Length: 401
Ligand code: PMP
Image (cartoon, rainbow, N blue to C red; front, side, top):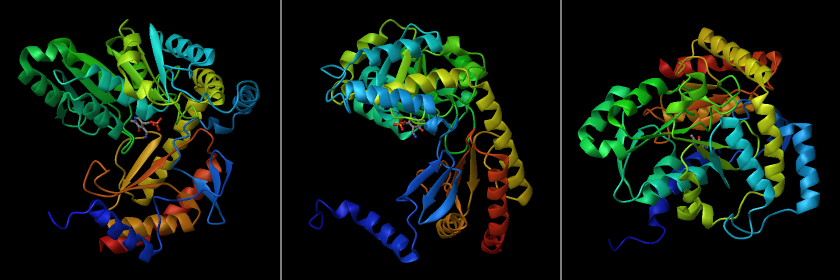
């Protein structure tokens, strides 16, 4: 205990960083010197194709959204300088809430400053020390953190395994009827979808409430882009839908929509709503435009899936170990941290950027190269990326040998 200092807990991070520095790799501090388009940036002076941005619909440079943000910036200023609960609610925020509720066909919506805060705010307000939350083991950190903040009992079920969920609900007995079940629509690491109908069937049998985080599936799945629940035709079974502006909507912010009249009360019980500043007016203005484009963006979704299929098939043909079926997220499992770091570095130096995810942030014990596609990718860009992966494939064969 004597050796404990305030900073000693950071020593393992310092050691890991030193290893990266020695290898000349900084996968967690990549700096985009310039953003050329939704799919290209200048990194280390190199023109780079981006295949790891979550910019699923490629709307970050939508001219109408930029114009709306610019006009609002001029009219309402650079920031709200306050929380939604105090001086930070402009009529624009409420307008966007009404538009989200209409888009989802739900009674109401709350807008938060980020998706992280939306999960934190909703889950902590619903799940207190007398409650139980049953969640998919692979849920995002913001979901786990929301559970911690509220103080509920947390029970994890095996990823995408409705039988395991049913087993845990059965064990809860009468408490199951008031449990909050939490899953995601599209899981962001491997690109796999939740079996929402089967999960909803468990809820029908045992009771409880279902919250679905559609952060990565908003704009991507469903005829109007509402997400996996729309795709799987089970939106009526979902009690709360949470999402973010930071992916398909190309901004920053978060929201929750629900049919329950109690949703509005969550504002008053939610510390992450009350104690932080609201999204800037220009952010709300651009999001109102991109939400409309997302709803009408069938052509964008089609292009996204054509490119996803192209890249998925190409990578599989080269022999890469892909984590799931075709989706706009492609996970490539790589054995060994050193191998993954070296491969990621080569990829970047060859002109392609994707995310490197290391355990414990990955679902398995292996590192993951995480690719995300965009509707703005061209056929030629995907060919270029495939060419790079083809050239680098021997690196992994040597490592496996
Ligand atoms: N939920 C999920 C499933 C996510 O992947 C993320 C972000 N990666 C969030 C919530 C948080 O969203 P935001 O970036 O808006 O904070």
